[in-house]
Image (cartoon, rainbow, N blue to C red; front, side, top):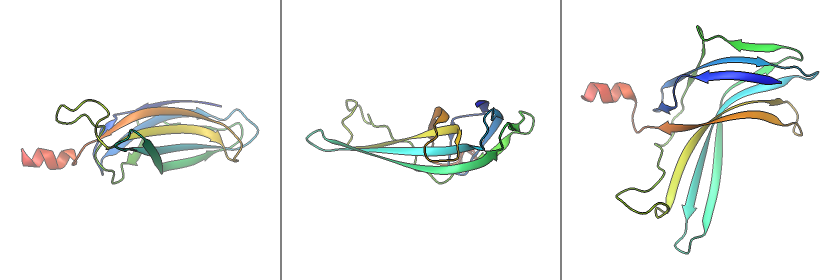
Length: 144
């Protein structure tokens, strides 16, 4: 199995759309699943330096590719994926603090994956950092 993909941008706001072009091939004898998801990871750091990390994923698009089949989202008509309501990215180091001093930080990753349908199969993943702004670009433009 293999895939090639292109994403139009990785700096978004809630409600914005991403456009994804894709050419995926399933060369196996079993059906495979192509997924686009956002993984939000938060880190809570205690005063003593202990760190608790939690991740939450939200699936934005899923499609099945039949055995020996293809899935194509051409660049002239890419798949449109809407960004759900996510908190703005906050990776810390605000107000000149040293990196790692903020007790709570979080960030988002856009994951495109192609993998088998059963629990024991592996997947090919492409992970992109996703910066989420505080408000949609349309709102910012009307304020200016």
